[in-house]
Image (cartoon, rainbow, N blue to C red):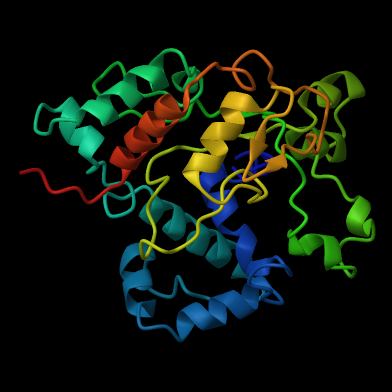
Length: 287
């Protein structure tokens, strides 16, 4: 878990629980001073009794002797919720289409066929049910370097207390994590610039139609139309978005040129793929 894979599951046996415990203490995220501070906040919450119903009486113990165990329980509770039907509902139009309870429009279906064929999206974003009929995950859980440019609006460049490299900082992704974990160069160099392939489920979900979403591991892209156009044209001379040429990749090593960069899609085909991606939003009501 995490874009760079640093929540491996080696410590808790559950990557999702390890990831869930990270943001609370990260000074650039929730910035709680310690696990004890998080525990005290949970003690004061309206769901403290529910926590003890699940984990047992006195399970919400913030003492020095028990805090590690309690903090782990907090993280595992979040992971359990993230695995629940409320978060992973599988109620998109595409899910109902697979069940024969919804029909895709002509444009959406064209986008599906392109997604699974010419555009090569399904090579990493698996779109078919699993062997026991599990809903498609729209990720193969691999890591890839798509050649995403640096995002000059990334505030981390200006967090000098945490980023001594300033504007020269480079997000090396999985390779950077593996290097910091002590792996040999022959291992981490092949992974430099790679980030986790995200699921495309709910890729267009937003609180309001005018809400601007960000895409890519660093938020460089600001619409589905933009990132699909990038996938299609990244390597074409003179390719542009809103009149601006694509900048170079943040990490030039290990860029995927087999599945991204020159797909030969027309503008109409790009639009069809975007239409299909919008069928992946949960909460669809079949007619």
